[in-house]
Length: 359
Picture 1 (cartoon, helix red, strand yellow):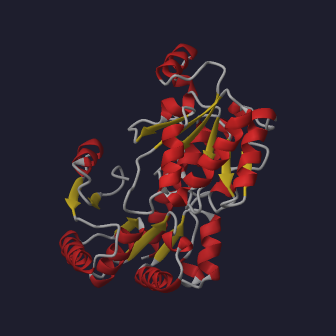
Picture 2 (cartoon, one colour):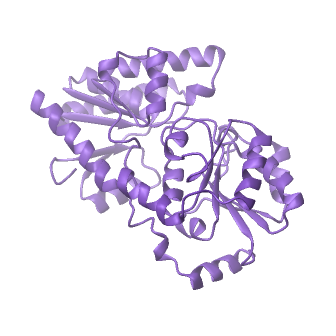
């Protein structure tokens, strides 16, 4: 976008990552610390900081991502009278909330959308959910392209970057045999990513199939939605489950894997499933928005009900014993055609230009 606009990036510091973005993209950045939790004092402080930045920069467009930055960003942009206030929704944590917490989160969501001039759900499932719950008026809503927030870099996620020699050596470094069937999970190791169901289903399958492995790629979050101690013990005590922690580059793990296992409870438009498909491997996903828009059942993967251990177990067995209809090349080509980053960026630019031409 910096080829067409003066771009200013605003985010929490992220331990220096915002400075890296500034250098890589050649844009000015501002640090505004924002928490993922409900922290009234810190949130008011961040709101005031954002308001001052918007009054200083006088942007034509403010485009926010993530729930907290969306709420604070849209409120500050509204108060600063920014003409075009856009918010991309990449998942709704409130879907798994109940009671008073759900009421609070519903209210915050409605405030965010009221302050915005355009709302961009990144999947058609999210669009439907927002319409059904009447969070905003329909004319504000639009899915850009075929979905996703930013598309996928098909040149970066390319299986051809990893030859057989690399894959053999990398498997050996993880004590994975050449004939092992490898399931991989990529994401935060938390309850609402379906980790507890995944570990239980894999443990059952592992009793009948020795030559299988499960790689868990992602960091544990002990404070936000932690997995149970029982699941932690299963991971620690099963030699066939490899917890490798957070990784800066997940591509090698996709390259040595036979299938993605991603039984998440909720998503917007999951980058992990996009990455797996672009690397040419099939996926087992839960029947939720985003996942069921990327995966076509028994073609490029298998769709299972949310939180259903038995169906997840059966899907893993089917993935081991029954071939899905599409080849790795076909799985990848579908992503190139419909979800490449180049395509998505053109669609976002088109939205920006249309808004500016109408104002």
